[in-house]
Image (cartoon, rainbow, N blue to C red; front, side, top):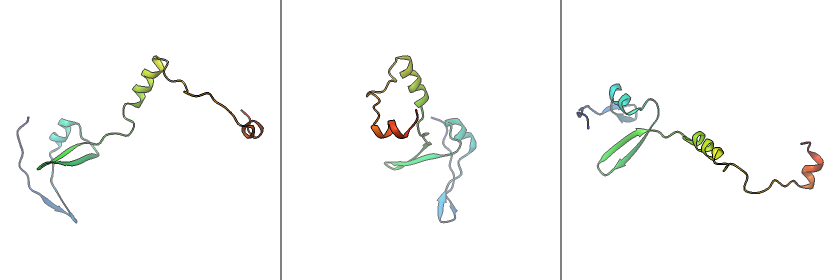
Length: 86
């Protein structure tokens, strides 16, 4: 664990906040959005998870294993056959 840094809580509008040195944020890979949660008597700040993170790799792996096929057959209705051109 790195050396601790002491800072003050400052008023930011209707909020209160702290300034976190850029070097600390860079050290753990935080650049924009964060997730904040309380664990016991601590506030934990971590980089926000990106929606669909890892999906591209997962789909590529599925394709390699030929596990990317539809589970059910494609069936069309009479309406689709008459009104749509495929």
